[in-house]
Amino acid sequence: MPATSRTALALLLLALAGNAPAASKAELEARIVQLERKLDSRGLVDMFNQLTELQRQVQQLRGDVEVANHTLENLQKRQRDLYLDIDRRLNRLEAGGVAAPTAGAPTLAGPGGAAGGAPPPAGAQAPAAAAPALDPAEQRKAYDQALELLKQGRYDDAAGAFQAFLKQYAGSSYADNAQYWLGEVYYVTRKFPQALTEFAKVVDAYPDSPKVADARLKLGYIYYEQKDWAKARSQLSEVVQQYPGTTSARLAQERLDRLKQEGR
Image 1 (cartoon, rainbow, N blue to C red):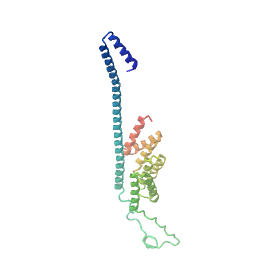
Image 2: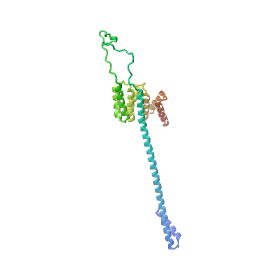
Image 3: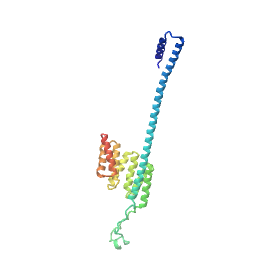
Image 4: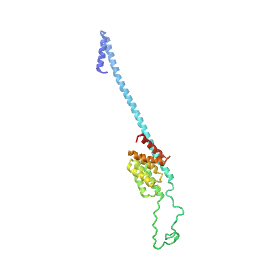
């Protein structure tokens, strides 16, 4: 309570006391002191209430942080599980590696290189040596090693491993998947220009690959991140139209709906 108000209250009470005996005046002064203490205690109560409210807000913020951390942990776990699930599916789809030569294909029977052992015509050139066959086991080993680096979050090492795989095993049955995961390495590290280049290679170089839908989806996501709304909408719409009923189409439609809600 302000000092002026206290003084006024004291004067008022003393004036009302008038000609009261000295004992009554002393009692009034004591009551004034008591009233001042009560008024001061109200300020402490207000401060206590404010402190209590701040503590409640801090506790609520801590709860929100804990919920956010839990959500983040769940998302990270889902991402790891997704990679493992994709890898398991790839193992089933790609079991057996490179296809064996077609049964009944002609073979070179004689030392001269002609069918049936007949010597080659005079002046004919000897056939060129066949390219060495790709070892399916070596391909699989190199591919698995690169994929494992990606799952471990060793992105630089994974990028180098996938690049080496594509250079050494360009004709591999795993090449389209390796190309896609190379794009994924750059995507998760937000190196969007490089990711655009690598995902586009999946679409252009492996048009029949089952990874094309996912690559187009990621292209749409990257264009969205780059705020190129027209290209993002174009890529996502392609996924919805060309791959209906797939997870890629569902995710593409969700992002298209988001673009619409944001007025893009």
